[in-house]
Image (cartoon, rainbow, N blue to C red; front, side, top):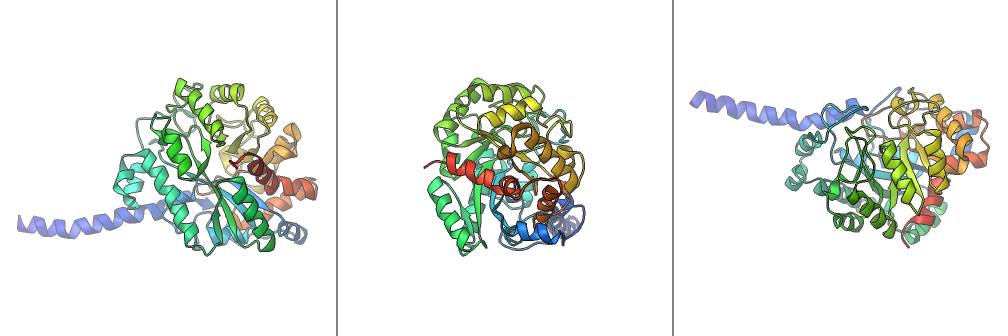
Length: 386
């Protein structure tokens, strides 16, 4: 017995040490780039890029234990690298649950990868069993980073704050506005009143589903892939009442149809591909592109292979060109999915390569400015709460 206790005393700390290093190893492996920095672009592209207000609609950095304020040599973004890429506004999303064996075709809701990740990253105990607690914890991480940033990272909740930020950004662009989003509404845990808790925590964009069907509606990757549930219809009304933007990324086709049939405000798709250049379960059809644009919304084009069918700048630009030709430049934006366990062509310091790609594709400087960020800026200025 004494020998067994001695072995356990040796093995338990070793095992715990290995367990707590897994998130960083996973982060390094899952959030990868095709080539390391630097990411050169032409002189004309670099010159134009430095004048742009760049905005991105989707980044999952809050899921990981990296400090947002420190520069890292892995993952896709942090404040120093976002600023180097001339990003002026970044939407950060909270991830609260993903199914085991995650895939693009069909996932149940009866398993979860994030529980062990939360434990391994030493998140508070309540996050081990509550999806709402996980969303609120990640929101608090962003709030704490902003408080420690000496004014370089600003969480925006309303139009007044965004206007004030933009005035400051024009004087000194070495700062970043952030807007908080949730990837799927499973954190409301089936209770409409929990939307109020998310709103009070700073959430202003609500993705309805992620990789599985939930109490609100069907996922493009779920088992049923249905439309809005009765609760989901109440949720849409409450989101519009609170002026929270609805995000249809990962939504099933039936869910998109149901939302578009009742929405009275612009809707967005934060990170997606288009079926016209890359067929796939979640990539938008021409019909959905046109109907989303008709609400006044924007479509964020992603950077990873399942969205654009290649890990390349050329594939990203092809999807942007296709969407712009179908619905107009004013409805197209960037939706990287950085840090969302994707393999990207570059990290956030390489965004001038998209600017260069858009130049080569024949877009004007004004069109490039719109796609790279001003479309998102204008959507938020018009639709955030007062």
